[in-house]
Image (cartoon, rainbow, N blue to C red; front, side, top):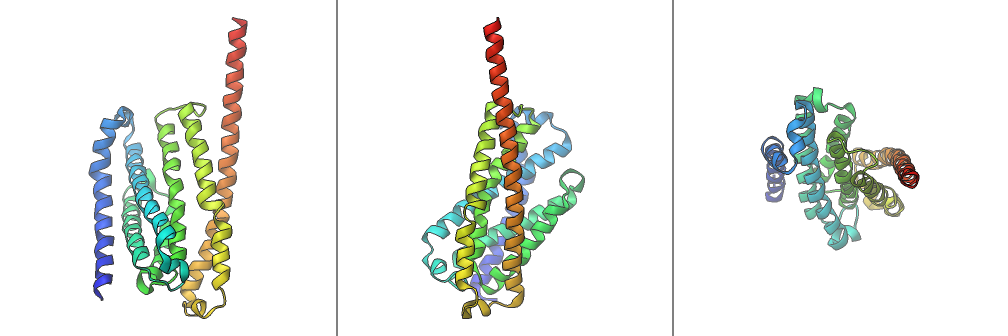
Length: 262
């Protein structure tokens, strides 16, 4: 194993241990001081709370690094299949450590946060990252997929508001819902033409055929399946936002009419 591969292994292990520490120690300690409602939660809710807190932190760290790589890493932008994957490997190494940590927590606290979909998602992601970390292939596309992490904080915040008892028609909930819809659309839907145009530009080239069949399957099939789910989720989020906004508007109109009557 070369020196850089050893470094990536250290990064992944450090990531795993750090996210475990954040889940078991940091999140409970910070949450009790930032949100008094945390202490009133049931034990299962506290487990999910800590899990989502760690998820949000991971999403912000990896998402920002991903955006930096996408904007300033000329090597992978010029050669999206075999460009120098140094920075991408570091970012994927962090995510690999997080995914393994989260899988361990899911299995250990199955009654609280167990979800077969997340298990399949994590295992599929780890399978795809094996080719990135092991062979250094497809760095542009692996990094591009991490843009989706930007939508995670708003999704988690929606759950936080719900478990703390915020009405769906409350201003914080509506603002977060709108932000979630906009960010989800930008990082998962609007970027699809760019992603698939880059995929099409390398399809059939020598660089493409140098990717082993397993790598091509992990890349193309997983991308299509994931984006089908993204479209379905976007539809669901849009409908949810529409219902909440209509409900809030009706509540506002009703309040105004009552005020006039009084």
